[in-house]
Image 1 (tube, rainbow, N blue to C red):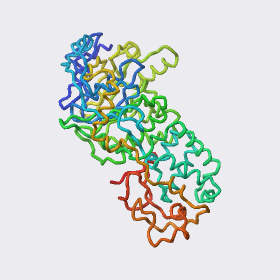
Image 2 (image 1 turned 180 degrees about the vertical axis):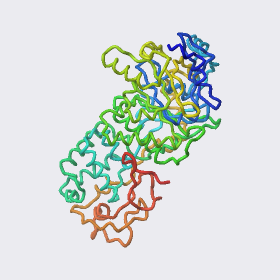
Image 3 (image 1 turned 135 degrees about the horizontal axis):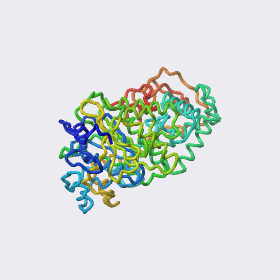
Image 4 (image 1 turned 90 degrees about the horizontal axis):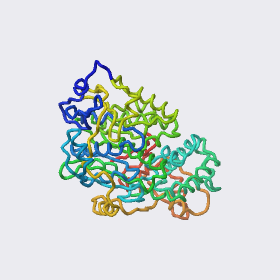
Length: 517
């Protein structure tokens, strides 16, 4: 350690005057200093962050600790619970010698406390309120990543979405999209491909096979209605504490491409819907993006650019994003540069690759009086190297920190408790039962034989459920496909049922559909 820097110097960097979260106490010369708390200002939590470290070093407990304190200060939190360890945030913790010892070391007044929580499950697989998205809202870019399509196939999928948007074919679930692609590859629908530049029959066939295989793997339940409204994540409890929204993922943890991309849809949807608030005195929501490396793995440049833009801009809408992963190198440089708050748990250096990752991690920190290579390999469980943004937006000194103990249960609650919490939730009636209303699949399945004769694009519908304006011909004169596929441009926003004025769907980052309230 540098002789020119003292524990008092580091402690002064964390002596904030406004509201802040207490992470733990400074460790200096091998001793824990409870008189030197390490904190992060509440207004700076929408400047994003990183929680990193090797498996078993305490990242999950750090998420729980931060979530508790945010909730206590009235800030809602979203947690992705990949391993099933975070449901205990809803129940008071259990006092034991280890907890009491840690609290005494860091100067913490520990009180067993449970926090208001909602539990969700993707498509209803697992314990929690079912969380679904419509295909239209999910968009072609995110869906292409889930289907593991290449760049050319991704672009072709985008053209198929564009075709469906223009023709008023509502894509609510997987069978809707599959039916549109099947129509375009059929003898009857193949002429329609001529109007979609760059989409070949062969590529459309590849996409159709990918969709069929994806559906055969049981993935259909993740897409459909009622679509989840991400504004539910912004709620506070009756006592003013922020609600902790826990997405239970153990049932789908073997499908990392799916759940990591679904998390990105949630974030993109929040970005689309929330108004600009500038620099607020507290975040509207802090979103923890667990297993972040899965999102970036094999991502295209366009996909990474969209992530970077989302992270950069969502701050001004009051949302803080924390990426949770093993090493900072898992996060692209342009994204990492936007993460002002860092909690780095221990790293391992058993292999040459580990040693390379360690050196790269050290370079991402500000100048420090610590020998970070040595420190990062010697940290114990529940210890971390911390640097955050101070109240004026400048980085705080690097501080080795012994973290506080969570006050809620450090482990999962029983499955029966989760199921009861879901049933008793005010959201259960709204989202529990899947709805399959008339959409592209039903319209195309009901069409009479014969190729449609496309009509001009000048006709506009009265709403997302009104299929055409002006006088109609009889069913004998005009087929269903002529009415639907050959009609003008329609809004097919799946969130709306007869409430929106018809127009082309507005697609934003990742090709997701923008919500209009």
